[in-house]
Length: 166
Image (tube, rainbow, N blue to C red):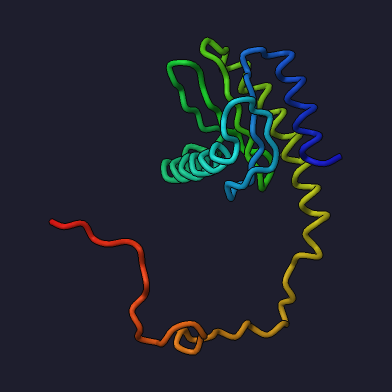
């Protein structure tokens, strides 16, 4: 079963138990969208923001040395956005309505994050062996900019941007 199917199944179950959850995003720790169940939000942007939030939260946790990073929480006037680590390479971000019982949500969401993250890690491990570079292959040749076709080495670049008058 792939990560998208697992996320869909897990989010449907979570939504049945927790109706205040309006949707979720599974994203890589690099900010790329893996799967989404959000009706109105741009999932691609949320995936990137979740990765940034995760990176910052992880860095803060390392700096203060108070244990392992568990979640990143953004509370708004209309609800919360919570990001959980999901396995080694993914993040689960949930969007909730106001008035959510966050303690219960954290407990249930961490379990969902563990299951979806495990599915993604397994899927990634199966696909990874063919993608690994050969450690004995020669390094790529670099081409100096002056030898590339298209313009003379010291020719001014054409640009449509102009500095506004002061």
